[in-house]
Length: 154
Image 1 (cartoon, one colour):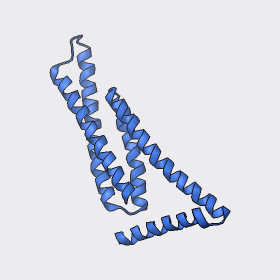
Image 2 (cartoon, helix red, strand yellow):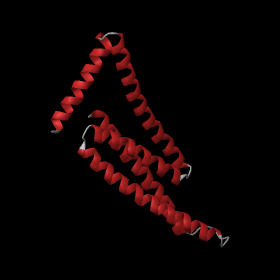
Image 3 (tube, helix red, strand yellow):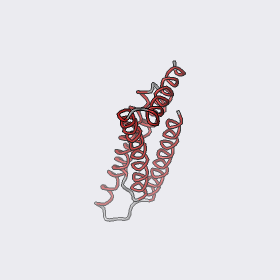
Image 4 (cartoon, helix red, strand yellow):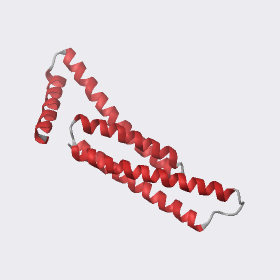
């Protein structure tokens, strides 16, 4: 079944390529538009991921986590349209990691708010938790990039 889907995708790409170079003006325009949209989706996903990594480095975790979820939605849609079960499974795993990190962020933020009321410096435990969170978020971003590369190859 999977090889049939890959064959279908190859056939679609071949038809688009043929129409792009050898089709009539309407077919060429249609092929150009499709290639343009696919390219824009890929570029948008990559730039979003890069900007979220920059925000993560600046400590803006909540926004980064939400936007990673948006990237997952786009990737999930692409994987469903090509019936890529392996990518869908990996996306589910990454989504669960994202949700776990989101929960940890909420806990760290609540602890920061609690400690801020005491006017003392943040505890070393909280600082260590925040460092570990950054490491885990970077790993999640890296795993997401790896999945995106794999999905582009297929």
